[in-house]
Length: 389
Ligand SMILES: *Cc1c(COP(=O)(O)O)cnc(C)c1O
Image (cartoon, rainbow, N blue to C red):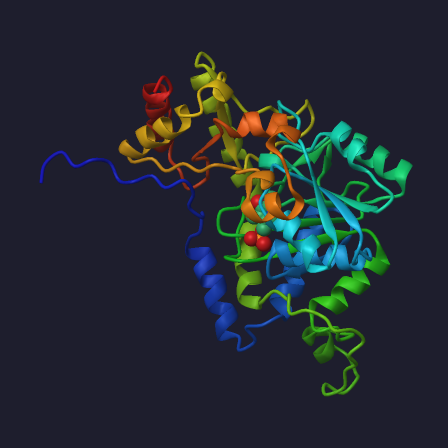
């Protein structure tokens, strides 16, 4: 074989090394494996990173969002406002509780939830707003909190993309929302394989979520072994869930957390490299964070300037990059276009004009810390070659 093509560059790949392998091996060798000292240490260290609040490690962000909505009292007949430009997990958890998600349109520049659209969607049944910091850029939280205050609504932040993100200088997870939930899914800015972290400053919500995280039992397995109460004694106070994080996952998370600032610096470097390289192309590039704020750069999504009038462009562009051995993705097919949500709530694309226009040509490019500079240059060359597809 001669002149072999460069290896396939996947859309995403986790950045893990010997330190993660050793930590996981030690967790297994300890004989504990499920929720225990590693999980407690991970929660403590994550809380130290954020600087304030109660931390609850869970086995996914989806679980965390479910616990958050349950704790704030969402139930049958309630409405919860969610963005249409998100992953289905943001909305499905509302249905778990028998309530109805109400999808709203995004802002054109940031693809974040549009505060005016939120205001218009409020009804007497509305109980909460769930925001998503799209790609890792914070939503207009001042506007969201003002709407929430004026209508007496709770605010949950789906911060699956937003670690670490800063808004008005403060880390997401420490803002004036009721609950914030981070994801450690395989492709997120740090990973535990599967996992999530709930952050809240509210003592009562933290207490409820801690109980519901593990079968509605009033203490978790770790607490049971720490306390003087006999280990066999526990009380079931609600029909809870099975959402606790394992020590195997937490051990990996502690190592990843120790690397998060280096990860964030590298993601910023890659985003800056793309911005410079693409500035002359007919692409809408991702919005940047305001001065003093920070973008987590979980997703680097571009759109064609004429995307709405050339819907076939994206297919050719993605195929062109694939021919060059480069993976891409699309974040997201808006919820109003997904069969279940569309049919269940009779959603029309014309009610979400900004998300729908963005979606027409939206493509996410590889941006992750396991990429080399050479990988980024390959992406750049391929984008330049195929942008006029
Ligand atoms: C990844 C993601 C989730 C779900 O996270 P899991 O940890 O996989 O449950 C939820 N919301 C958004 C916006 C996501 O990107």
